[in-house]
Length: 69
Image (cartoon, rainbow, N blue to C red):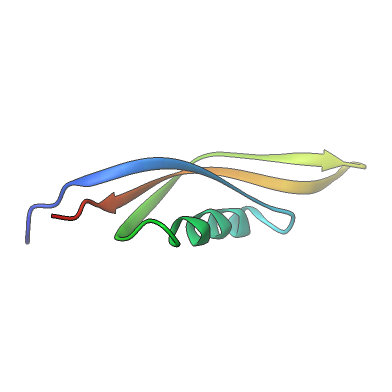
């Protein structure tokens, strides 16, 4: 196994559908400019309520990616 060095960033994704979709949206957008993403950790999950129902999800994730040589 090689020695790896990772960088972490924090992202917040959103979705009207679900918390899972909010995470997927954040990772999908990040993948357009960040290579080598290896893991994520959900650090916060929150939502917006409208008319006594969940209207929107927001999920904050830490994302780790490998630094290139």
